[in-house]
Image (cartoon, rainbow, N blue to C red; front, side, top):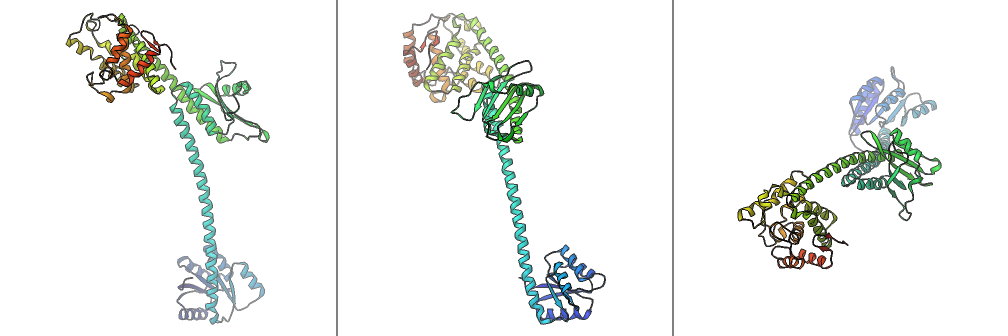
Length: 503
């Protein structure tokens, strides 16, 4: 409790105001402000920070009780002490009802003032502390509420990010449909999620993929899915949610659209006694369906472009092989040998797929080589050999223009590099040569040796294999040669046949 106080004394008798001021300022470190009526007192309170107020109950214009009410409207922590020359029980009760903290009878015993001030200021301190505690508690409750709301928003953002990230990772429509139902299980409490192809032209939905939370239970026939519900959603194009009575399960169906036309339905179920879907579940499921629809449309477009592009590039390869009948199906066989070696050596499926593309297209650069050199029956001159050595660069440049196969572009560029660094076009050596290019190199040479060419007939199998063995560590990566020899001895690679079997 502070020693320095501002005391307001309100009375219509000047003598009382003078006595209060002289006594309190003489005996304490107080500042005493005075007013002759309630209105004057209110003006002082508006401009000064008053700690305590003494006021007469009977005054002209504005009496002490009304003044007390108005003081507390301004600041309900200021203690007010009423003074009166006509004490009565009714007056005392009335003052206490109006928030007065004490009641003094005139004439005032001045020696009691300090004790009264100390008491009311102590009570004020406790009252203020209580108010602050309440305000702090309210703030804490508000902060807790805000924090809970923030955590919920974070969860919602995380759910949306999860949806976007996982949908973006899908490489094919099949992968995307599987991701769709798996995500449904992550963002909702569904027991099952099914994706069905269904259009207005179809009479029965065709379930493509399903998710079941209980892995111990096999996925049954999707005939149990409420077909009428699916038909309704397909017809209306609007999400559908049923909360069954008494927590007896719930059903949710959300349409997937391409250019505003429904092509499929995401159907989610909660079993009996397991609760119901909420509107928030419907919101997230609809968000998932919209993003999946967009991704499916992009994938379908990409797959169509990809297939058309691949068809165009294969047409180039076929054109090259048509120019040189001795190399017919060479690219297909090289791709088969390379994928077999890659599988045996432990490459990922993604790397095997990269070899499939680059193997089939590895000689596409020969489209830029003149027939006089490409089809020459005899030995090439040094100048002609320099021209034909350009085909890996031409091929990688052709692939590079499509901005789709950067890894395949690199594999094609370096499939004529040598382990000893004497290859072309960049004289790379040993492990600086891309690993898949090293696999392609062995496959390419093996097929070239065991195939008829314009300048020679094909070699016997054992002769070709011995040449591969003799060049291990000079032309070829010895590790890859070892894997090739193992597959060849097992009959899994044979000349002109590609992969006979693959583990």
